[in-house]
Image: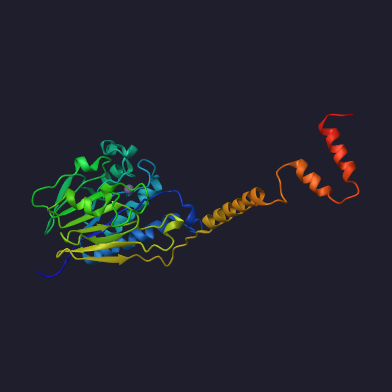
Length: 308
Ligand SMILES: [Mn+2]
């Protein structure tokens, strides 16, 4: 069996009409998003392989404009890919509830023929694959399916150290593998930082796709990518072109500057002997050594006491 691409894995497109602050210098936010989508569609066309979107196609479950939807549709029409599949992420689900998916942009996009929804469904590739959309209580819901080696899920997963203090233990890659002990590969969406992790003992592989469009200043050094999954289950990252991106963290820097100035001010007034928040202290200090000292102090005291 020669090595062939089995599919391209991507997630967290977060398509939105609202330009993020860090991308304020983008002249056209739609173009900025769609040039990335186009690159992915081109890649799927060239590789002649299915494209699987592991959730969060849209940023807001019910708030994509007709402009956004129709532009997305014409882009997909241009490439005429026959095998584009998607599962719903928490952002695609109204109130992060899969039961409400019928009334969502995800559902509209599927109805327009942009992709085929494969929530809670299998896909017959060389190796069987099964997909689960986002569920809040996923550890109770996700189950292994017979003769299935690959799973696609939308859950916050990480390998090694917790990427944020409140990240649940259930998202640790080693615990995700335990949900599917017979699996060989798990593809995940949700965590915007893409990575590939292999369990040292079971050799199971976790591919976390990561986001494709950088939308926070924290991602300024991130290299957006999709992953090509081959039929021998080897994984290859494909880094997307970010040369046209206009991204800035200056709003974060000015916020930091403002905060540090504030901190410095508070530190100064709380430690310095020369500065006080008391008007009286400052006034008295100002008069030190001046000939008018007594006059000023007497006037101030008289004013304060309401003397005429
Ligand atoms: Mn998500």
